Structures are given as structure tokens and as C-alpha cells.
Image (cartoon, rainbow, N blue to C red; front, side, top):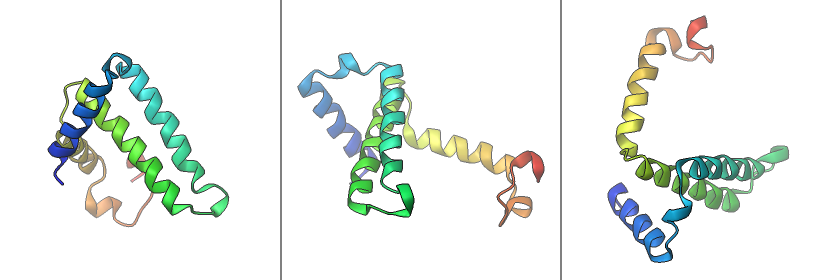
Length: 105
């Protein structure tokens, strides 16, 4: 399924339930953080709960898509723009195989 199809389904889902009124940018950002915490719990103590992690990851992605939509941003454009910025900070010849921060390369 294409990203635009998923976004359309998400919009319809929210619209049918009249939930957009609750989806302010700050509420969506908080929801991303909360769901990310729940995702972390799936890996807590070195134990991986893959089935639950899939569902929590879906929640994180859902809220990210909703926030991008609320802000009028295309998620793919955001990722590509950030990749360009990060590529400049971490040139391949300096960053390959290193976990050092860009200002330490």
C-alpha cells in the first residue's frame, strides 16, 4: 500500500470519529512521546516482545503521520530533507562505521 493511501485511510478514520478536534500539534507530539515510551517497554530488560512492538510502532507512526498532516507537511519530504542535512553533517568518508557525533568526526 502506498503512503498516500494510508494517509487517506487515516484521515477518513479520524473524520468519521470527529477526533480532529483533539489533534492539536502539541497533543499529537505528546502522543508520539507516550507511544514511543510504550515501544521501549517492548524491549525492556533485554526481552523482545515483537508482536507488541509491531503494534506500538504502528501507534508511533500513526501519530507521526497525523502530526505531519496537521502541520501540512509531507512525511516523505520531511525525511528526505532531514537526510540531506544529516548527510552534510556525516559525510560517508568520515562517518562510515563510526558512532561519533558529527562535531567529533
